Length: 255
Image (cartoon, rainbow, N blue to C red; front, top):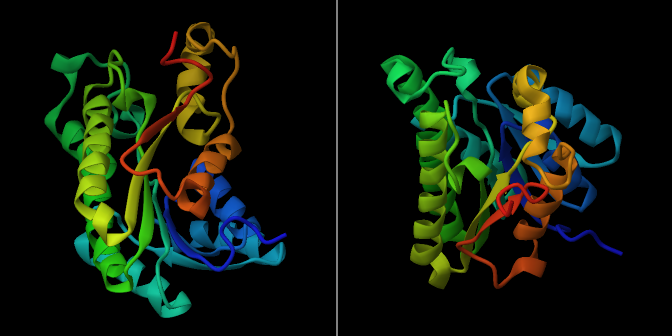
């Protein structure tokens, strides 16, 4: 049986490890040709090597998702390699501790940290969407999935820029879904809860018991569980789904 993404091509940002890496591997298993993009080409190449070793087809790309020229080059390279861009997963992102703002309330954040996080977690999604949509309009079809977060659906203490950015990602997603529905382009978002990745390791080490007390499933999710949702959203099985933000969170938002 052919995979659910057989014959499709995909671009994944933040594709080295965690959710991006797991999604790149699953896309390839489901039949897609995958362009894996990361800030470091060597890091992207690690994921590509795993895909190719398993019999898939992938290329590695390097670029800064906050840089317009780099983003355009990623899309151009994907099309040059595979002929088109059917699926895009805009996944690259950072957390407050990566801009030295961990555990700070709103009035304690500094401006540089706020600007850095918004640039990566919100503006880059718009930059990527803009380039991807231009290509998809030429083709006459396409699907885009953006990584938001449960933080895009609720408030979280000591994460003001992260929460604002993820709410913004959902807003961008819904707006683009409305604008391009008649062009046969679907745009959705995935909202992970607490997922076991390098990004969440620090938070879990500091307050793992408190985190799990808020999750009805009483465990961390896996990157593969997010990848499954992204894969479905990019597949023809989700052909009537656009403008949605799916939380994959073990019941966190419902509790």
